[in-house]
Length: 52
Image 1 (cartoon, rainbow, N blue to C red):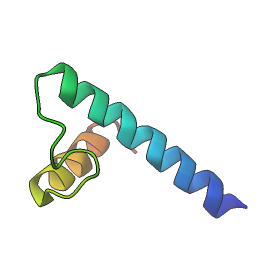
Image 2 (image 1 turned 180 degrees about the vertical axis):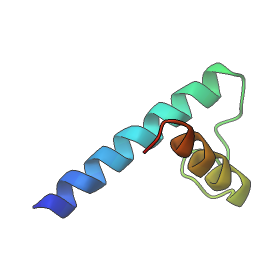
Image 3 (image 1 turned 30 degrees about the vertical axis):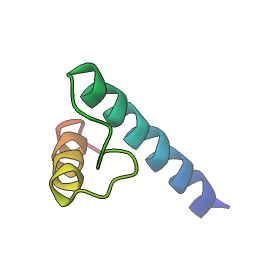
């Protein structure tokens, strides 16, 4: 059950990242779903900045 909770939390966190990126004017392409390696890297950096 903990795996499901962890996955849900991770998905919610990623969706928050996506929303912030779109609000900054980024295109949804490659962002959602996360198919662009640069965006995946940006997400990991963003997540580290949140201390997660």
